[in-house]
Length: 329
Image (tube, rainbow, N blue to C red):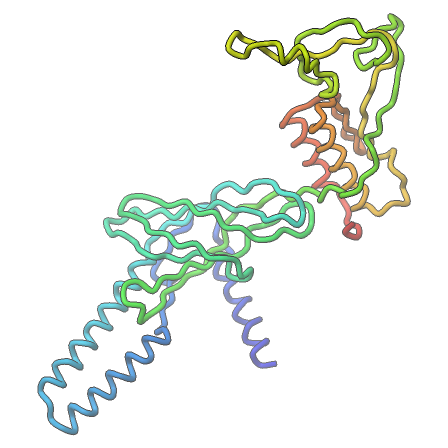
């Protein structure tokens, strides 16, 4: 019980200390803490034994050895402390992920001093992920990529970062905390067993439908948005890529035209909110995979039929930031 209370108090104190970490952060001397390691405590006990033995037996060489080792420990304190102090910390990019995946945050450590920095360990303080180790030469910087699991859709703030070092002798450990001002966008996790895409048919007055399948009209060059199943593999195999060969698709006339509209309002209202968002996310990915132009409608937001990374990102962004929370699918 006492241990839990101490952890809560420590966590609140650290959050207050890092609350103002906005943009570029300078590690001043007041933000770096240092304590002896297990090896350092053992080293101190050894010094005490040497000192007692030298006093009891009046050993001149014993005093020399004891004070030389003590001087090395004092020098180690200074070098360990300076190995971390006066670094500049700068947040980088955070890539979009789907819920449940590892969110990755890019962090930059900048060394504008004339001293090289060695063996600086960086990790998330409250996550328990694998730590990164960086060496930073004088006047240079190092970029690190830290990952932690994502849970809910929406914006995910970067966890608190811990920087630590035991260089050069490992007798002391200096550390500091940093709250990067960056966040990653978490998309809804795509539904694993989603229903098929909601394709609908609509006729045209001229009787020509680009998505029709009734009458074969010939072969033409591939155009973005053509069905992958319409690829003319026999003609493609005859073309020599060295002579400028390119993809070709079969062209049909007549019939109906496939129209793909992903409408959030068309889903059954009795479904859980998060399940509906996950289904929409799956349909967006499926349409992109099959190269089917799709329109997207959600509330007052409407995107025309399109394809590509920008269209995909806009649709998933709308799904991730949709208001409300339901049960996870």
